[in-house]
Length: 126
Image (cartoon, rainbow, N blue to C red):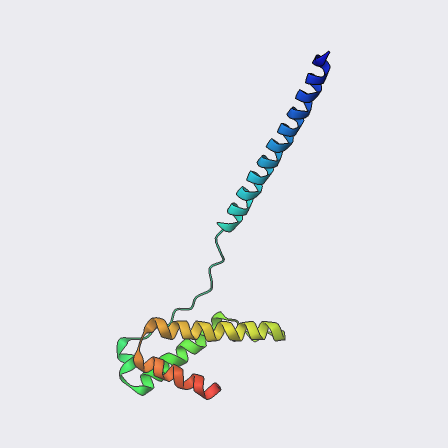
């Protein structure tokens, strides 16, 4: 007489086990999907090569010339030189990009004279 009840209990246990296994499988698949998205490569930012020599920093004029080249390259990379009409949001983003790119280039070159020119230019715009 207990045989039909035990079959019912086994069926319910099997259903719960199957539902649990399905939930675990879905969770694992979702985690795998998230990790795949996280490892997708980010877009490579555009770059502009600026030519200068170490002797450029021997004079104030040479240093200013390198700084002008860096500013022009940063404008180009950030979309401020292309003549297109930008929205307010695009203009703000392009301006932030320009400032970051220029500061990064000055930092990478690591010339005290170039850093001084950049710092003075920042104070002029503030």
